[in-house]
Amino acid sequence: MGIGGGSDMYRQQILDHYKNPRNYGELADPDFSHTGENPSCGDTITVDVRLADDGETIEYVAFSGDGCAISQAAASMLSERLPGTTLSELAEMDREDVTDMLGVDISPMRIKCAVLARQVAQDGAKLYEGDIEDLDVTKTED
Amino acid sequence: MDTVTPKTCYGLGPNHVVMGTQQYALDVESIRADFPVLDRQVGGDVTTPGPGEGDDTPLVYLDNAATSHTPEPVVESIADFYRTYNANVHRGIHHLSQEASVAYEEAHDRVAEFVGADGREEIVFTKNTTESENLVAYAWGLAALGPEDNVVMTQMEHHASLVTWQQIGKKTGAEVRYVELDDDGTLDMDDAAAKIDDDTAMVSVLHVSNTLGTVNPVEALTELAHDHDAYAFVDGAQAVPHMPVDVGEIGCDFYAFSGHKMCGPTGIGVLYGKEAILDEMQPYLYGGEMIRSVTYEDSEWEELPWKFEAGTPVIAQGIGLHAAVDYLEEIGMDRVHDHESALASYAYDRLTEWDDVTVYGPPGEERAGLVAFNLDSVHAHDLSSILNEYGVAIRAGDHCTQPLHDELGAPASARASFYIYNTREEIDALVDAVDEARQLFA
Ligand SMILES: Cc1ncc(COP(=O)(O)O)c(C=O)c1O
Image (cartoon, rainbow over all chains, first blue to last red; front, side, top):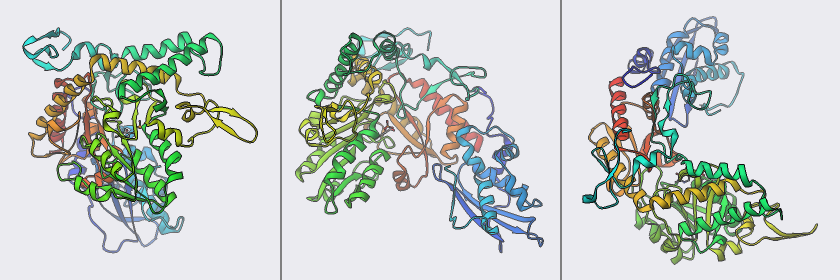
């Protein structure tokens, strides 16, 4: 786009989620809660998840944190999207699912911001299920 | 801008050139003609390098502290080497090798003269400033430092020196100290005088901060170091491209900078070292080119500076750097400095007109040609992404000064940095785009 146009990466939807984050805060008794950061930007996200009685379906999600609009909007959208899906569906979410959810092209330099919340949720689930151990904080530098 | 012919305006002194209604310390328009990339449009597909489909926004390049652009005479000098006398140096008796060797050696002489060194013996070509730091840290630091010693840096140090001496400290047990900053982003010289003591073996300081724009009193810091028999290493990556530098006047023992920030190519850095010290130091890298004679049992080193340039050196880059020095000297480093100061001062004034903008570092007239800032409502990365949509290229992040950003209480900042070809109109474009971002996030 050129001067005078709108902004491609900052469509109304992203700005709306950034300014009015959904499900922002903490859950009272989450089944798991995990934190991640994007050291180069200083973005941080904590995702809390409570599961349904089947121990597999995500029932509630809350997130907290701060950072750039892309990282925070992605977390907000994810918190709306995840309830009703299963942990194995969460595990399968990839980068494209995130950019589809955001509905915009994310430039290569910003992709880490976009995928932070997804990665935090996935690592939290893996820790919960015992697939990984000893991960204090997820870092999206890799 | 293309329609305006610059003319000398004698009322302002012969060094001032008028472009439209603007006055500049140098002839910006003819300088811009040497940098075709400045005429580019951007905004399309980034996976195929170079101009292409979808590029429809004029480029406003304000990321010169990261790397500067390369003028035609420098590009030509490198192309000319590859086209007409490419050969390895110091190895062949044949004609091309002799031409290449002479040109490569003369590049050292030219750089020595440019920064006031005594001769080529004191000028080692490396890969970049970072390697220059590491060369001294490994070749001197590992051998000389121990648990009783300390190395003094500043809180505004770039990772190039900070990480290097921090890690050498871990290997040798030497303590690492950081001189604190005053509120205005200048060094607390009382703290410097307190931290540099008789156990200090090395004082490694920035000449110009790549984040705050602060110009540090490197002569005084060198003197403090020498009062305590310590060496002084000055990181001049943001100084040599932008102002006259004379290592003899500073008096420091080592001085480092990068070619790619001063109109030269990537892949070349410079380490200045006093001859007597370099002479005593053991090599950093071993191999061909740096030896005088070799047996199966032992080796003798080549004379300076080749002792520190193991393997096939940065020949084309050295030749390119020579051309870059010629280019800058023809403009005149005083004028380069005046032009950038004026731009920085203008940018500082325009950005600080707003209450929701925080600018880091000292006020306009005292800073080097860069301005790091934050807009209250917009994260630096978002700001940079939005500016990019307006063709404005700035840096967002911690600019390789993460501990300093922690100190500033901001994980990241946006930084606009200026060079010889930048104009006030480009700063206006920056300020307008910042305003667009503000409105988008309002
Ligand atoms: C002050 C300072 N020191 C060191 C460096 C490192 O330079 P290079 O990446 O060329 O090694 C830079 C630039 O990145 C710098 O601004």
